[in-house]
Length: 294
Image (cartoon, rainbow, N blue to C red; front, side, top):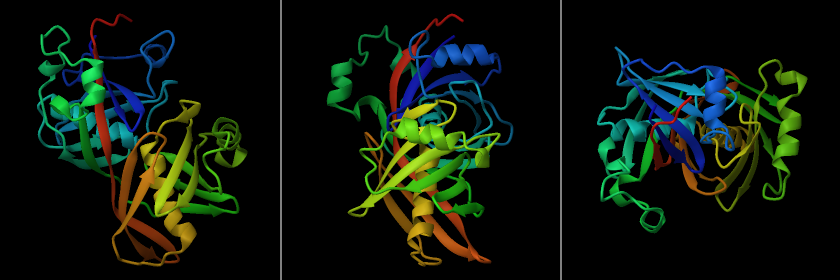
């Protein structure tokens, strides 16, 4: 089996081209592949499947083998992978519905450029020195689902942006013990039985700083796309900006990269409804793994 590894702002994924429908992975196999000691290691695994109605279908799994959720960084990465496979239209089906995307910058090259046996194989030094070289890093604008259902708690806001998230606003996000505090909230009875991803958010100098504890990974990840979207929307609710009907744009800083969330807020009764939600950020090719045996 051939796998490709990409990362979106440090959130890394294994991707398999399954358009012929030949790959069927068990939960144990997914767990092994994602294991950073016994397998290859990643924050998730995706299958790029064929679709009769859309350009492709995205099938996503957490490292523990759970599925059925959307992944924002994974969505950008699978679009980058689809482009490298030669796909040119990016309307695709994900677990939470239909998404579309566009490549803002970065070249598109076929998979053959990733053949590690070719003389022009990319070395790590070249990669870190020239991130844009040969299409390794692309900036992708991904349309997310509309959001109108959320719940405000005394200590934060719960919202589903394709995946369940709880957003807590803090004074100093850099010095929090994310794993301890995130794990405690993730298993609280109010979010049972499914659980919840936990985002800690701090707004400073027109930039939203976000750190996320992800269920399924059961640790802090370097970025979480659906969590970044939830954090941006919840910050609008929290700050009561009241810029109804006007497109908004939020600069976001994850642990290692910059992203942007744009959206349009409107009122739906006594609550906000968010439409035209886009998550823009990088998707970077890391490696091609050949002949991995399960």
